[in-house]
Amino acid sequence: MMIPLDPIISALTSIANPIIKDKFQRSETVIKLLKKFNLDPEHPLPDFSSVYAYTLVEYGIGKPKPILELFRESEIKQAFRQAFDRNSPAIFLTQGEEFLDTYALGDKIKDLGIDIRREFAAFSAVFIAVTKRTRNPKEALTNHQIDSVHKQIVAVQERIDRLPTLEGIRTEMARLAVENTPALPAATETAAKSQGFALAQQMRGWFEILGYDFEPYQVWEDNYFEWIIRIPVRRGRFDRILIRGMAGEAGIQDVGALRQSVEKQKTDEGWLVTARRISKAARKEVDKPENRHLDCYTFDELIDVDADFSGYIDWLENEVKRRQIDGKYVPLGCTKAEFDGANKRQIDASYYGEEDGWIDGYIDVWMDDPTKEHISILGEFGTGKTWFAFHYAWTALQRYQLAKERGTQRPRLPLIITLRDYAKALNVENVLAGFFFTQHNIRLNSEVFDQLNRTTNN
Image (cartoon, rainbow, N blue to C red; front, side):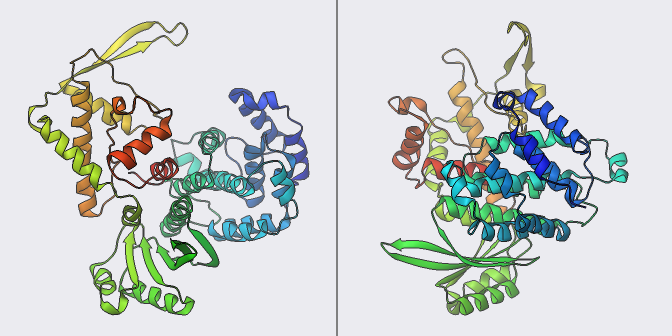
């Protein structure tokens, strides 16, 4: 039976705002509400009603009533139920967004200055996270790394709250979809479905931030999806592109299916996009004269079309050679101070030398830490800070280029921005504009860069 949502909504809307702003109090309030409605904060039951109600409580703290009422609509609940039962998140996205177009309270939500699609996506992300973390008792006994589901969802919520755009939340949904956590016992989610959904969210977020429009045409199948996007070519003119996305290897048969869809939908071009692999036969097929209106890309290659960093890469390699860093760099050790959290006084220090991989080793570990936020390297004039920055960026660039050549997952592309060159810049956006447009002729604005930074490993 479906857990009644009206009492949950009433309880959520009765909570005072000051409690919401305090992280600890907010978490305690969520736990109390979950227990009030017989939802175990540690391990919610793996049925749709429990997962949906759990999601509403975790998501709903601090949300206005009109937004919460959206998720008690029968059409919305049915879309999520179908997605849950068939283990296909694409269902609630397609059916849910169709419903939003005609939702009666939509104008009321807009009057509050709320982006209804962003809120729907945020709820969806939490729903995916709760679903992925729901375990049966057997799995709970065999997995020794299980943490409180509530604690994990709090981390998801904090990431979502820091994302100001719908495109960013789509990227978070993509990350959640491919997390290596056990799936619901009710419906075993295949890796292909997860990867396909993740690719779709990454691509949609990328196209949206570039300003491309989507036509109503959509196809969602277990092994592929299709959209039609419109790309402006000049004033009042657009190219209509049929996108066929898939998670596995794209082969010659997929090129044939793409051609048929392009002919049926009468689009200008067709793009076959996959997460990682395209067969040599498929690439040869799209190179044939009769297929000049077709292309195939990995997602990384698709991004390369609009985010060309080749000028910057050439500059970095030339700068390293000009300074002779590639031949004369001397490894550096570093010291990391340890402070008392209460009085902020230094209580000890850790030294990282040759046995730790020097300062490079420390930065490697820091880079691999998902909780990292900021790091500063401090030192007196002439101690090697600039040389280290160029050396580390150049080393990372070698890894990036090798992965690009092999077609494997690319590590992050390091960016060296010399702040003294932008001393008169008023904000970060000015710095990025000067770096991208003026210095390296990269056609990216700060919004596109932010999305690129979230969407890929680049």
